[in-house]
Length: 104
Image (tube, rainbow, N blue to C red; front, top):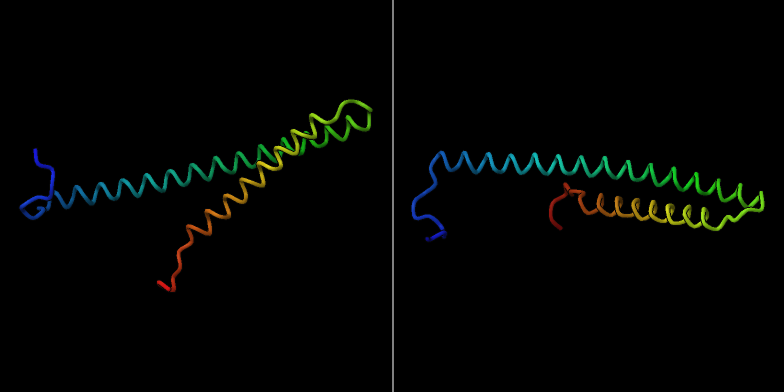
């Protein structure tokens, strides 16, 4: 079974199939990009809410004389994860930016 290049030129049907495959790949890429953006925004909102809530719980526990280190650590970890998510998004945006000036 030989799977190398064809000896004959591609016909109209082959060209149409290749075009459809390319369009399908582009749609899949756009859909994946949109779903990643939605997930990133939901994660960012959840981490911000959890960080805020844990921080307020730590402050209230400290004022009442109760143990406060656990909620403070949860708040710090969520804040660090949120910062990591933002840095990753900024780096991805810079990498994906297209220059219209051409090569150089």
